[in-house]
Image 1 (tube, helix red, strand yellow):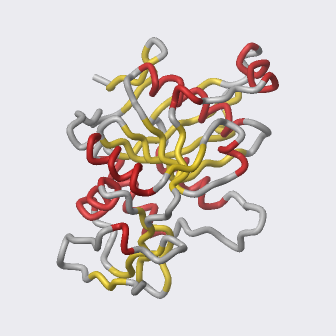
Image 2: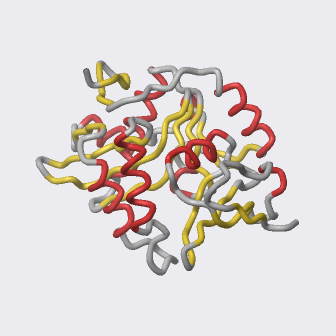
Length: 236
């Protein structure tokens, strides 16, 4: 299948079903907030930038986690029982996304999170659409993750950890809170063993898009998030 070129002026994407087998759908465009929100609402996300052009993906299958299928292994339960970490939301979004960009990853040379991505998602955070989870050990930021929330779907983007299990603990903590808040799906994009061990699994792109269509009628929780009695709330 062809890879589509999109320009900076038109806010439009080809249908995700037209993506290449590897998930690549289109090249070009920009990362303005309106385009990013349109992309995520239609099951599309930007993965990296090359020579000033952005690459947009919609993989099939799609790796997702249904919150009620979250798996918490015995080793992680002991971490929560020991209160090893504390958790916050949206207290230092830019620190989290930059830590995700700077954390070395096995098999990867550098990061896809270029400054253009940092600037774009920081703006989405300012608008109350993108959110960060921070994991603390005493006063040190030791892990975290960030993503977008639209309707009752959380679109996870990246996570980091500088001590064992910090990002995993943060992920578990926020998934539990999101489930109690009525969220129905966590988008993990591409399969990883790390998230698979927590219960994430592949579904067809068609099913994912059908779920996004239904999600379009759900109200989004826009603003700065806080943990509130085991749920996710808005900072007043």
